[in-house]
Amino acid sequence: MSSDEAQEAKIAQSPLAIRGLTVSYGEKPAVFSVDMTVEPGQMTAIIGPNGAGKSTLLKAALGIVAPLSGRVSVFGRSLEEQRARIAYVPQRASVDWDFPTRVIDVVLMGLYRELGLLGRVKGAHRAKARECLERVGMGEFAARQIGQLSGGQQQRVFLARALAQGADLYLLDEPFAGVDAATEKAIISVLKSLRQAGKTVVVVHHDLATVTEYFDNVFLINTRRIAEGPVVEAFTEESLQAAYGGRLATSQIDKLAKA
Amino acid sequence: MSGQEFVPLSLTPMLIGIFAAVACALPGNFLLLRRQALIGDAISHVVLPGIVLAFLVTGVISTWPMMLGAAGAAIVAVVMIEAIRRLGRIEPGAAMGVVFTTMFAGGVLLLEQSDTSTVHLDVEHALYGNLESLIWLDATGWSSLLDPEALRYLPTELPRMALTLVGVCLFTALFWRALKISTFDEGFARTMGIRTNLLGLGLVITAAVAAVAAFDAVGSIIVIAMFICPPAAARLMTNRLEAQIAWSVLFAVVSAVLGYALAGFGPLWLGGADSVSAAGMIATVSGVILAIAARFGPARGRSGAPAGV
Image 1 (tube, rainbow over the protein chains, first blue to last red):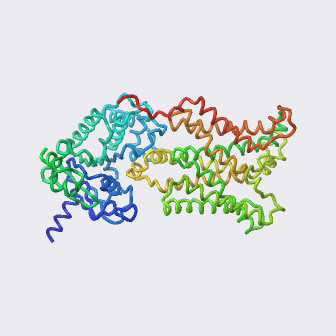
Image 2 (tube, rainbow over the protein chains, first blue to last red):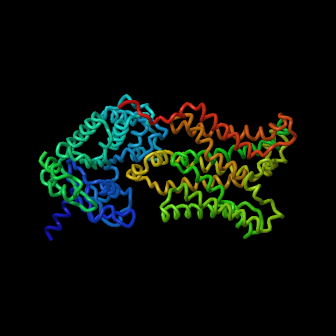
Image 3 (cartoon, rainbow over the protein chains, first blue to last red):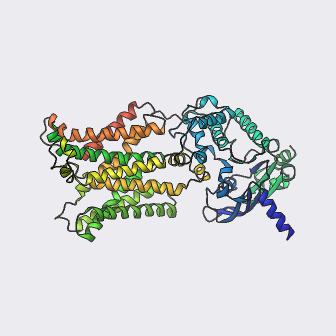
């Protein structure tokens, strides 16, 4: 009984606790019976090969796709109750950047929960949006049409929108995919400042080479959970081998796990 | 033209044309950006079997049964499109194409098989509507606008179309912010607690109501054109959604007014004797506006190519 109670206490404390999550788009499950417990105030990377269900795990946890089964709790309560405490950065390529709108308008979308359907955008809201743009180094681009931005700039605008949400838990889907080195630096420094402020950050990540440098914890997934824990414990040769199978050369894994 | 002629003969059809054009153009903006512009096309085709069925059941041409039949057909079509899209795993455009051509063809067959010779219900009417006939014979001039006796005999299409337009405007204004966010980034919108499925359905229903009301008054040609041409032309004029909506309303109004005037008087100016279909001319004008915007619109360049980093 006491181990059950300990489990429950852990779930209650965790910014994002997932139990028995299964998601399927067709006949084959994309995510199968996954448990995950995110540690508060830390940066966690979700890693795994292509098609391993990393993004799907995130989307199901957020209610964007409906899971077949499973339970998600956010800071010990249901997702619906805690929406205001979560900020989400989708994959950059998931939206049409030709949408007729400006950078500042995208950031203001992050204030939707504050503004509601009909609340007026006031000077204070604009100032907040501008401040978030400054934090990602995009202050000068406020009036730019979003289609004129580079990939890295688009990613930073998305991060600024998440900052505007003023959340406690930040979930990012491949924020470093296809961005330039300067943007990667800018993003990681913002994420680290969030951690410093006691926020929790979860990132779907594809670059194994930077895992030990950027993150405190890793979650390895290949449809099922492979390993979870602090980088030194979970980011090992065995777990990488288990997650990626033959897709990584042994020498490559050696180098990564020791790095 | 004096008020004495203009008010009874041209004012009401023009207003109905304007209301119909704007009511379709407003939701058309969002449908266009969601790559669902064909939905307007689909709806205006599928309402035909609904209207014919309603006529066969009730035996009369009257507004409410036909509107209900049209609405029913629109809902059946939306369900069928969704079903085909999901079960067949094909893209929505293809599913719509299959459904609306099939249902329209079914409507045409029904119409030919049934005895509708005694009433004003035929394929031509379905396509072009009868905008020119929506006249207000009780009016004697501008003063009739203040005369309750004359106002009672306004063509019923006018208040109905006006009411539809008010409904469309209310929907757009009320859900403006949620529509904008979920059209741009649906996944993000869901994490904010926006019920994107319901909102998307609400948009389609709003478009369907506008299409059915407009179909009844002005025929499907205008409906199809107004869902796509003014919003598409407006998108080429600006890179801001707010401005795009304003441009689309302007283009819709210009199409309706200019199209109606050209249909009535254009052939005479060219030495012809008869006027041409107002609905056809309104749709044509909207197409010409789109062509001009495509050539000269300031925002027509795909801005996608990023400059540097």
